[in-house]
Length: 278
Image: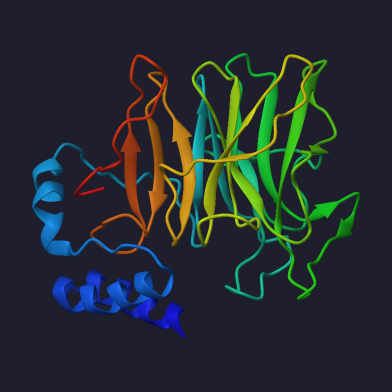
């Protein structure tokens, strides 16, 4: 199967065998009617972009998988496993919950469940949160036609200082995943990741306009960012620079972090690999 060529190519990249990886990845891209850029065309540019960041491990990592954090003013939110939750069959880890602060204080049961909660974003005024959860709503576990539980995106608002009961967003479905929320700098657009039908392949990044009456525009595929592989974990900084992970763009191996700056007209510029050591 074509997916095997992709995974083998990524494995070869991770061990530094870039030219051999090109052979298998080119085969995968051809099978998806997409153009593959060989490593000889981009590795020099990535190396020139490298060395601008320093990586340090934080002291509040767990023995389980720790997922993207979010910093809301001075409050840090972290996603990691809760040992009281059900164990995931796909990684033998307890389901993940959202915690507050480096001391990992659990958020209340209004937000967390016995299933997985994931990455989140909070508005600048601290009054609205969008977050990812397994398809578990009203204490009912949803499954697609293959009996697989997908992801959904939920919204909760502060009422008298407490998070309200989360509500589903209108583009959720039990047949595909929607998650990994991010907001534009002016908070007029919600970005998210989905494998919904009609995408370029794998998981794609979408945007939806947020209207003043708290309704949402139809999801638009961000074609400039998406590839036949996977794009995930979007984040937008205060300058409207868009960051995301991808294993489809020309990369060092596996999921790399990429960014695209916004020009004066509000249009995203060229997608760039952030380089080593990130």
